[in-house]
Length: 114
Image 1: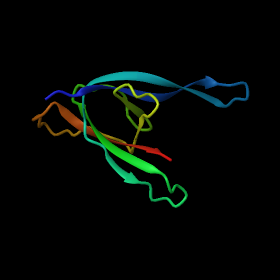
Image 2 (image 1 turned 90 degrees about the vertical axis):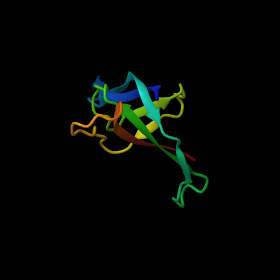
Image 3 (image 1 turned 60 degrees about the vertical axis):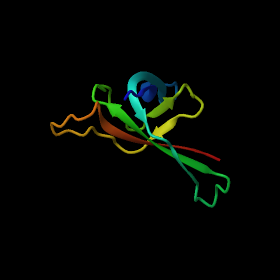
């Protein structure tokens, strides 16, 4: 089994503007061999978004991932930069000495529109 290549977008503070407000940019990191579960879709149940839709997906990151924490990051799959998935929570790798597969971290993410 082999995963696909995804891009992680990480918001990084790069300085301050003339009003002393923080300035941020998106740092890109390419990760290979990520398993992408089939997204599950549902209608947004917020009454203020009657035409809203939410898509949830799970990304299985490889043991070789050595990047930083994924809190607040976005994940781009198949080059779709306009519709990135937003990481939910604080994903952590499973540890315990068992290595039956090449993947050890489940990253839940969501995408919504409408």
